[in-house]
Length: 355
Image: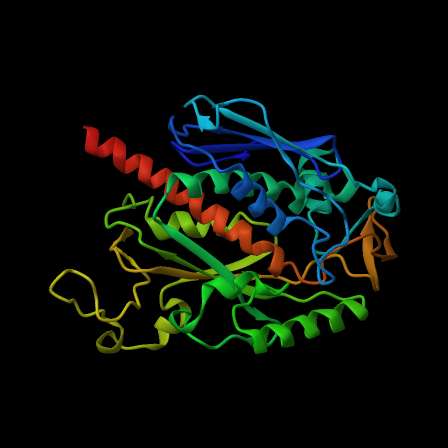
């Protein structure tokens, strides 16, 4: 199985299954001498972990990271950083009912067809449990990026939208509610909506907006490794993601050039930022902002027809513990993937300046 590594110089390889002994990863290429704040790493894990509120899955995982290598006396040594996160609350019996059936809109069918072997316990390798490893690596990348600020927040749930531009939001309020939306009024409506959907045994999708500030000019490698292309790939590699747009995104397609062009100021900054902080695939020093769309979680606690491995259509019902809306827990994952991309480009740029 290929495709388990991300990044060129700052490289993360992850391993493990949802219901295996542990999940984990190896971070290669992290420079030496970075003092690590382990509490900050654990805090990122706590933002992602299951069971943290009544609007997410009730699986209980402490998600404590155990570092195996690459760190000595609190700082990185420059050697590969190995880590594991033990699985403690895997109820594999919850999945015995799907051993022979493929859940609609899940990876069950495609994995079975491709590999001929299927770990049906919690989705195995296709489970979003794997994203915990990305959050560990992203937390280390964030500490490497020092002054760069990365803030993601819930900008919509179903048809409830936070319509305010990010400049009018107080990012310190993101963590003040369980849905991670920095506007209290909209947040409460979102929470109510998710509770209502959960009662129906259903799920709902939403969007995450991410803002990157204080990024220097010059990150990005045209033509094929444009900064926004890599951010797009990073986001689309997250479970349940259906779309990515940056800057003016799809709205820009409705505009005229005279409306869309960002006029320069004398210092090279721009009066507007419809480019989303990236021009020609290279960061221009303005804020980078993008939006990621998440589908409704595929496991619903309602009866539905599906296919079994003998080719028959059968009735099934989801059970076990699942998120009615994945968006609140996706916030730290979006930030982590953005941090991995930026750490990689920062090292690439450092390499260029040495030549």
